[in-house]
Length: 438
Image (cartoon, rainbow, N blue to C red; front, side, top):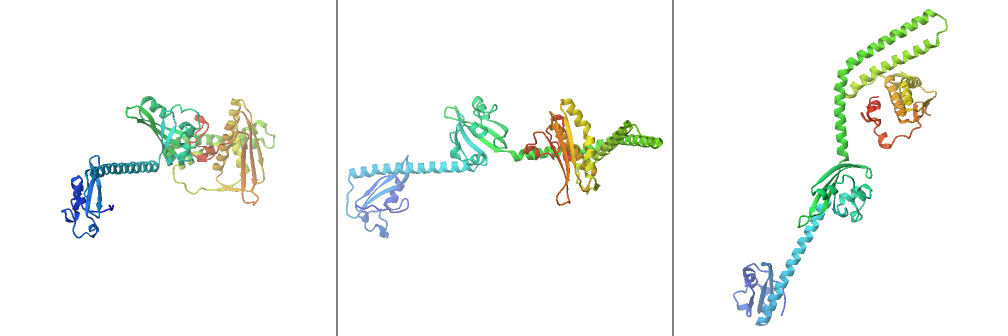
């Protein structure tokens, strides 16, 4: 008895007939039977032939054929044996196909799971991570194997218990989806976290699908859009109030100039007589008012220009040390009064060295120093020291002004944003426009 594989069409020949009818077929004299396929050299050696269908769940999967090269009558026991073997092979083939389908489906599911750009994980009721995709592992700087079995709140927040507003906890409590946006210090990112319930056959929640999306860039874009809207509103507002505000400044400037002119006339009348010390202080105060009002007018102009395209600036030769000294005098009343109100004392020191004249806009440069000094004073809530130093760079072509204070200093995130409009760390008392328009 020999065993070989023959391929025929359904309904053609011995094997094709079994495939068509789904019934066993045994032939003792194959060469003289109606099932012989003529001109098929591969079958010339066959004398007797028997075959059974391979069926599982009423589905034909194939045909098992046994052929002999000598005359053979297939007895009842042989036929039943072949039918039994055929049924077993059919079930085995069906199970193998089912296993392949399951394996293929599992592979496709895993591929899809890992292809998702969101960080997705599946958690049980005890907050254990039982599955995680590659995106989540990359987001957390680890591997999926390292995440399995860990508590989600340990991995995401470095905590030993869930967040107060944990969406997963709410999902278990109320049986529905929840989401929230959270700024995660551990990752330094802003995340959108959502939780969706997983049900068993009885409708009980057995776990959750936990989805994490990094929305840091979107939030930054949203902030930039908000700032753009604020700037647009500021431009409209500045255009409306600039005229009235300039009128007020004109009154201040005009009267201050009249007072200074009158004071000079009195000094000329007095001749060489020694002036009262109060007159000298009065003149200095008037000059400070005149200087501050002029800077205020310049600030209004620059606020208006802030939301428009910048044009070429007019620079003049400026005495840098004089600009620093004037800025200190303008800022002195505010930081001194505020320090006194807080019960602290601020000492302002200057170390102004020989520096070359610089090309600059005096009013803008002065406002830079004013804002830096006032910011330093705000940081010294309990008092301290502010030191302004000017010096010439070694190459002799550059001048440097340094401002230092004895406070705690600036965090890196704050330092990066000091020139952003409306960014302030002083709460409602600050506008966030200081350095951004200076």
